[in-house]
Amino acid sequence: MPREAWRIYAPVIALALLGFIVAFMLMDPAPPKQIRFAAGAPGGAYHAYAEEYQRLLGEQGIEVVLVDTAGSIENLSLLMAGEADVALVQGGLSGPEADAELHSLGGLFEEPFWVFVRSGASAANFGELRKLRLSIGPEGSGTRALATTLQQAFGGDWPAASRQTLPTSEATAALLAGQIDAAAFAASPDAPYIRALLRDPAVRLMPFDRAQAIARREDGLSAVTLLRGVSDVGADVPSADVPLVAAIAQLAVQTDIHPAIESVLLDAALTIHGGRSVFSPAGRFPNMQDADLPVSKQVARHYKDGPSFLRRYFPFAVANFLDRAWVLAIPLLTLGFPLVRAAPPIYRWRVRRKIYVWYKDLRALEAQGRALPAGDARKGVQRELEKLQVEIGKLDVPLSYTDDLYRLRSHIEFVKQLLISTEPVTDIVA
Image (cartoon, rainbow, N blue to C red; front, side, top):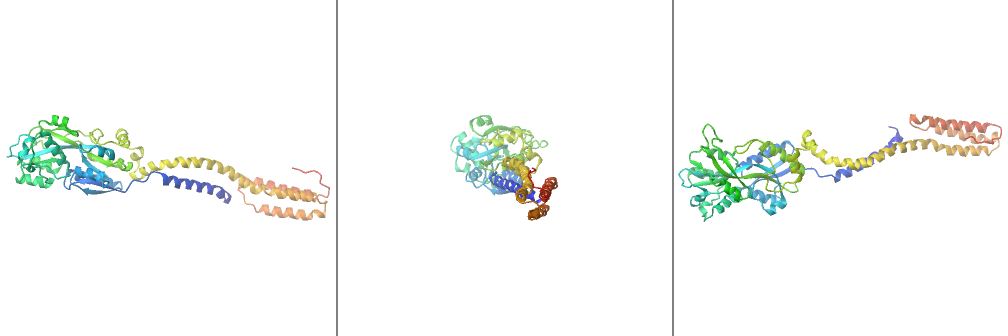
């Protein structure tokens, strides 16, 4: 590019770059590279699912730090305190304060309330467990919160022996060892310890014959049925349909979480929870109908229309940058169009000005020569015209403007020949 063009277009490019930098600084911030996931107790279903989220988000370049907790209650507390960004939470536990500060990304799976009783224990229904040694989960767990709700629904006095706080693994071991009579768990049917207990002849699963009534009375609960043989058709496990009550586990996040993180979490949720389970067909989860926390507009749009166009065809990092960077086009185009349109006329004017500025000197020399008598008196002016020709010959202009340059040189030659004439000059030729 000629030097003159650089002088014109360099400021245009500099202004465009400045506009790009300013717009880049003002556009939405990039998503974080690390998030904290309240994962529940190690060995539990929540923790296993959290590890799946950790793996899938890690493939997208997002580090997921798992925070071990006692369960849903502690998960909610960490979210409310800003000490976790994402958590698996049992449905029905949130209140008005959580509704104001947290969002749900949707319901993920049924989380039945399982009550396993030793085969020799005499208890026909949940209310009769008040007289037995019952573990209802540690403080801060969703199991304990749900069990406490049901104990209140069944009424009566529940002594400390029927409100023991054993963690999941200890409760399972104590039940099988006969140290307690019953144990309650709120867990996915895919949890390994649930599948093991369903097959163990030393314990039996207590049915909730009034599951429909309980679901109508208690928010966040629904009635489900564990069908006969669904766990093991050949072994006929269970040996009869078992009515149960269940909460819907959901993915809860802080309201100010980055939208791109919401999107990648939803993609992971579809991969992890989109298949069929023993209680629901494929495709039922994740969904926003079973969420008891508010759902953001972006999440609702994702459920309705699926991932954005960019997320469908580009990797997460690229799609996220393009999704944020499109706003740069507005100021850049607003600034760029006038600059690009103005640059060519300015460039032409600058090049021609280099040529036309010499006409001022040419007219002055012509006027000076005309004022002198013909002959030797004009020799000095003629020499000035020759110097002018030499200077103009050094001009560097683009090839397309050469005709203007040669026209100027021909005009200088014309004036020089005019002054050489010995005749008085009376007319000015334009």
